[in-house]
Amino acid sequence: MSRSRPARLSRDLARKVLENYREVAGVQCAVLFSSDGFEIASYATDATASARFAAIGGSLAALGTALSTEAGLGEFGRVTIESEGGAVTIMRVGSGQSMSLAVVANRNAVLGQLLW
Image (tube, rainbow, N blue to C red):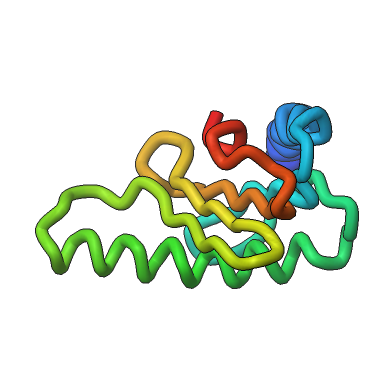
């Protein structure tokens, strides 16, 4: 079995897990990305947006990590940005804090449902 096959299987599994966000009212996009901002898998109503969200999310997760460390608060967990049109939540997932998940939702979403 080649090295690319397990990676493809992992991406396929991650994509299936992200598809669960389709059932959450108001969610427009859920993107799993690496610590350097590269998309691993996504569910999005706008497929072109997921790569941009991954890149921006990588930067915000890095800023959250730096701020948490500088303030002596321990490991970064998540950051939520709220606006009049909705919210974006970026949270660390996976072992070793090597990945993050960004969930973009409109104002009809219940924030607590984005965090499961």
